[in-house]
Length: 163
Ligand code: S3P
Image 1 (cartoon, rainbow, N blue to C red):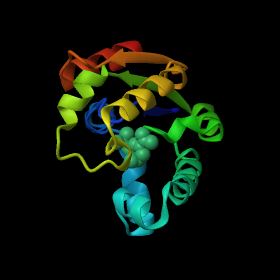
Image 2: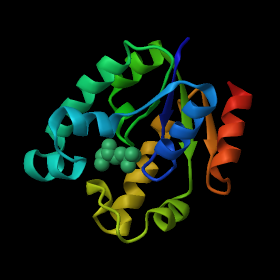
Image 3: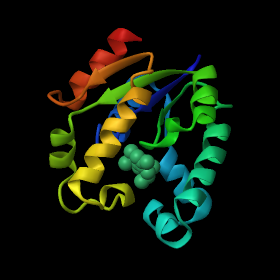
């Protein structure tokens, strides 16, 4: 059985929805950021701060390559994972790619002020630009669920209905 791969911008609910979806299917759940944390023994924030984004992306590629070999897992990717075409291709070879979407207003209200995501630290205009630029890539998903006005159960039900 192919994997289920959740993609989308930071704060769209990939990890929360992924965990619940995996429970519903009795599959394992894997979060690429957590895997990177385990492999490197560093948090995402620390990798960015101490070694830079390039190192983070290289750890991410290694984790994605490993997870793509597995079957029947729900994978929550980081918001930038599938912007690398190679990551997209290997995840798509062995998985259905599901996009989670939310408006930037909803994302910012969910994440709040105490967010520690390195790429959401800048001014609002920079975050807006990143969000807009990435929509084209996310739109290539097999299907997309808008999580803006839905609770977790509703999102999971919609995914299960569309699988
Ligand atoms: C990133 C998203 C983060 C994490 C890293 C980079 C991105 O994951 O991988 O901070 O480029 O959008 P989440 O989408 O789970 O926040």
